[in-house]
Length: 324
Image (cartoon, rainbow, N blue to C red; front, side, top):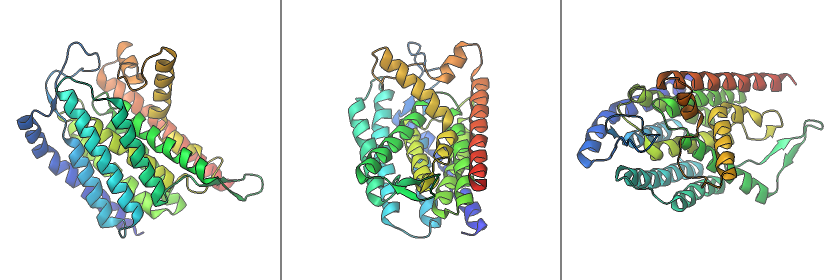
């Protein structure tokens, strides 16, 4: 794929999100689709109502750009579009419940997230296996194991990106850094489709950050965060995980290291304490750093720097893999 295609896909996705967010924000206030501050909830640190409509701009920016520059429509394209739309719909319902001060049940969200992952698996985007580091032969996994690992990966990344969306600029910044890393990996491996998806995610995330940087003017809510997590998971499956070596399996894990490792800690802690895994609280790293005395901007900078270090580590792994 020629370089200008990547530049155009980034530009188009960026402009769509950048131009759509303001009118969608005005619509959110008319519909009362806003995240209201609540003194009784530690996680609600903003002081005024914030529109929750950035998710629609993010979805539109990704879909339009991907259809324009992916090089044709396929069953995999359909699976990504439909799966993303399902997450957008269930996420919007969840966000609407939150605007009313209510909690949407976790089970319907889980079913939809798993269904979106199943669509991706059925389209042929899956973790097929890995190369034996000793013999150099490709070891194909049984179809059942392929299914389990693929669903767990997509569901897991979708969830951890959503869990990380608790502070202005954080989820967008982490998503942008991870997407840049996955873009570099895809380019190095000659995987054009994954590279296009990754650079489009960079475009939509950077445009979103224009309005979400502290103090935020708009939120993407669960709908936008789960969609970005879903796409990042698919990019890794379609790129870095495709016929992976043992070493390269860690590349996408490091690229998404901050949300993955932080939320693994949170999930284990909730499980050990007998709390529901999906019950939102203030146990993520960004809230812990706040309690240590950092201000919100410092927290975002620290976690993005940690993410950048982990992503650079994944690039180093990529270079080592090519030398071995």
